[in-house]
Length: 328
Ligand code: NDP
Image (cartoon, rainbow, N blue to C red; front, side):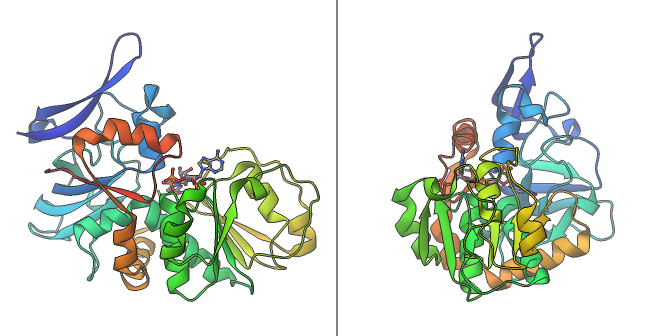
């Protein structure tokens, strides 16, 4: 028997979460049984744990947790054997398939990636889906060419933002972080941001479709009015990696930045990334993300902290990356 955070739904559709002892035969089908060591809190986990599952959860009772890292306990797939260290992100785990908020998980071998050299399970979850997506975003910006001028990161003090700032600064880019929490300025500077931009300076309705050419690239975790405004501030031919919608799913923009400045809007999806891309991104994380900076982002937690922390992330109140030791 082992601990799992199980979310149930009653006849009136009300959901509630409780740590429950379950057995391996209650886990869903899969090729690989993993002893989960660490999981984390991403924005999507906040949605999955919210009343009604945020429209994402496909089955109840459910074990949320869209990512985890741990050690293979048993495998019917030749690619993995007992003792291998693995990490999982995406593939609707924690939404359609039971996820990482438990001491064990059973999943398809295709969804896993071996932990790259240089990263342990705790560090992998300090990165988690949010940080992995930051790496995918950096890679997308590089593929399209980062222009001169600072690279802007929106939602900078959050999970995606913090890791993006640290990776970009380590790669030698000048990084500007947009935050609505001025008290995080020192934290963002410690990760390598050289400029802090107040959220209200950017997060307002587009007044003119084009403004001064300011940013050489952008990783946007916020969407909405902020993304619309940023599009008109990009350097000619620069790219915006659109990652998230913490500030809204609408896009009150015009087509002018695309037509007159050749701006690229790059959609980033971490969920359905093919194996080779996932492996490449995790290897780049191990190489390009300084571990001391990663450590500075960590908020340690245990399974019983998850109901509170998943609510906090939806309110923009989590700084950096929550790392949940499921055995604590
Ligand atoms: P966090 O909550 O950790 O960070 C989001 C940050 O956005 C907050 O910390 C805050 O930063 C800022 N923010 C929150 N609300 C608002 C608002 N109303 N207006 C402006 N800024 C706001 O979440 P994550 O970093 O984990 O995720 C960020 C987004 O990226 C989410 O929408 C998530 O779903 C998405 N995402 C997408 C992925 C993909 O595959 N495309 C994968 C992972 C995440 P600050 O306090 O600094 O202003």
